[in-house]
Image 1 (cartoon, rainbow, N blue to C red):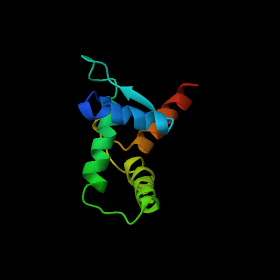
Image 2: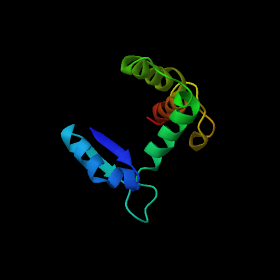
Image 3: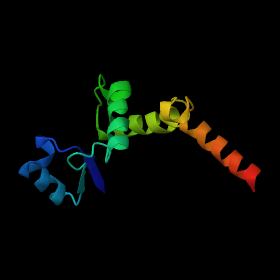
Image 4: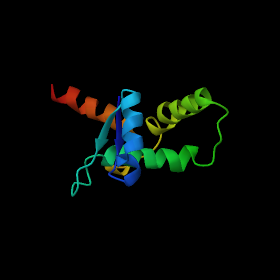
Length: 105
């Protein structure tokens, strides 16, 4: 599994690198001077924190997992409007895209 982050000191520390290695995780950091490497992941996690989990306290990991899954599958993909897609939710944008492809073929 890949963990996306910026080059902040907390993500380049020896402790963090040891944690990743101990859990068979791979770090993905944006390169200096290229702020777009992880822009999509950083944008998503910023929204997830702001819109869903910032003020919540979960009883356990399973409750947090279910809540994040619900956010992604029941809100973010089918309902949340995105500026990049012209104000459409990802599911609607994808549906329109495939409809256009069908009309071309």
